[in-house]
Image (cartoon, rainbow over all chains, first blue to last red; front, side, top):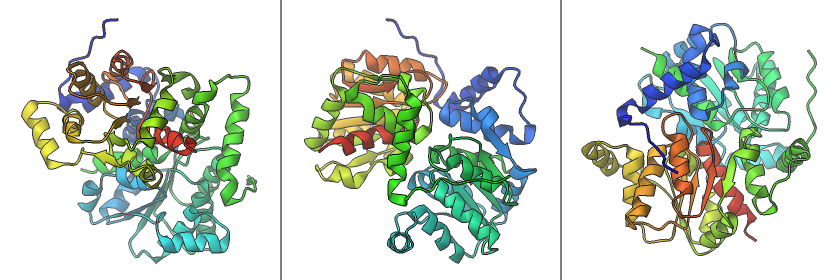
Length: 209
Length: 209
């Protein structure tokens, strides 16, 4: 079988991809303020379900941008999401990415409390002094713990990216976050992932002029 | 709205997730040798399309296992996939994960040759002395370059995990790999990702007794 490749210069691949995504979205109307986030998630997954799944609290993208401008740090629940977030772009504003999942004290605390490392790593984030964005791409237990900490007024995140993926308490954990009163970007349903979490953060980082 | 959480112990979440995946697959028949890989990818994405998209060359999982047992190294095209692959599990057999995407010499070569860093990073892998598995989760240009290197007999990978995601030459690059004569695990179509690449590698790592 003859395979014919499209001739696109390296520097043009992303632009061409976004053009194709726009074409494929067709008549589908996206809210202009959320468009770049939605398109970047589709770019990362080739999954057009995200055009419907992604839910934004009012002004979420603007709030996210503003927090980053003010030096917010991003806490995530996987090394993969940490690897995927553009740390150079974040550092322009003084922000850093933290993932405590591999920390020994977190493993210890999780065992001690009969919880997950993801949950224990949310508690560790209480020690951070910067404004906080959470980008949760894997563990619903992280979102559930965040919800508890918010309700206890122990933590007040600027925004939560709630896009864990999976089958146990994933849907519920996202519903909790949407009821928490904290601004959010959430992928409703079972889908999500650390790649999706990173793509959302990067889309907002790239949208800041 | 009242949200009720399922009560699952931290150590049981993965098992319970796989049970739900099996339930949700219903009547769908998976080839037994490929089942763990397919289920782990669905576990990572919550996307059941992968039950149909994933294509395996004959005996691919066994070949992959055997290569790992013989100390094969995994070369990937993203830091995210590198972060996601279980390096401890791989190290049991002497293998390592390499990603050359952030290397300065790769950036330089790519610019010089008017190609992508992903493509240039495949050339850099020619210097590795271990048996090689490629796990490509992002860049079709990496697969296209691999195909060229295979045809020039410059490289002879044990197996290629070909799961880039996206819109420019993604489908074609996967077709090329399936015609290359090298054993493969490929996600047909536009879908894939570094999370999918890592999940496939981990599924095989975990299946080795």
